Image 1 (tube, rainbow, N blue to C red):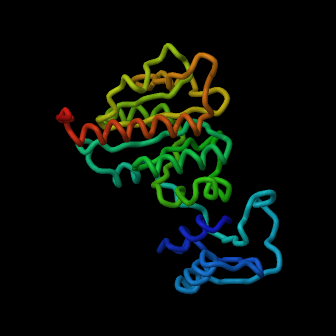
Image 2: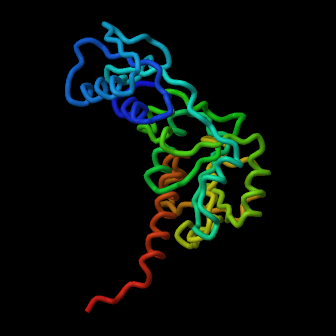
Amino acid sequence: MWGVHPVSEALRRSDGLVSEVLVQEGRGGSQMQQIIDLARQAKVRLRFVPRLPQGEASGQVHQGVLARISPVPLLSLEELLDRLPAAGDAPRLLAVDSVQDPRNLGAMLRAALASGIQGVILTRERCAPVGGTVVKTSAGAALGLPLCRVVNLAETLTRLKEQGYWIYGAVSDPAARSIYAVDFTGPVCLVIGNEGSGLRPLVARRCDQLVTIPMAAAFESLNSAMAAGVILFEIARRRAEAAAGPRTPAA
């Protein structure tokens, strides 16, 4: 893992995720000093090196700091559901169907955390690993969200429906229901598909409703991460409006 913000977030955890921090010699500033202080407080091995090792960070902006971490912990579906509030409290989940680009996955996780999503379900096959690129792109959000991997997403969606969730699948089909015409106020799971092929057919069939983002006729579609962000914040907006109650007309 590399980058000032992701490494700082990892060091703030209490579960021993970080085993070593490498700082490039000559890098200073308050943010770097904060990382050094956090590493020392956590009793994590700290090394100053003339050059950071090349690896997954090759070609990336490492900002002069790299952390060696244990694998990001992934929950079972049962563990994830146990962490959520009761269905009456309207939890919100994101399910990611075979998203293979780690930068797209990282951007989705960043939007998910910022919009109030309480857990993310990932497919075990054909999904980007939650490694350094995902953590860096998510600005550390991958470390702040409960993440779950499942073998069969279609069966998982069926189970969620049995527990009172309404499943919405995001598609680029203009014939699908507009996200601005959907009530997102109950227990919700939004499903986002692969960057190129979208939702797999069986996964799409398990959704209660397919939804789309209305766009100008000259533009065909957004990438999966951008689409996820738009819909997740629309869900958050609907929740906020419902919580605020009816508006009082201005005098």
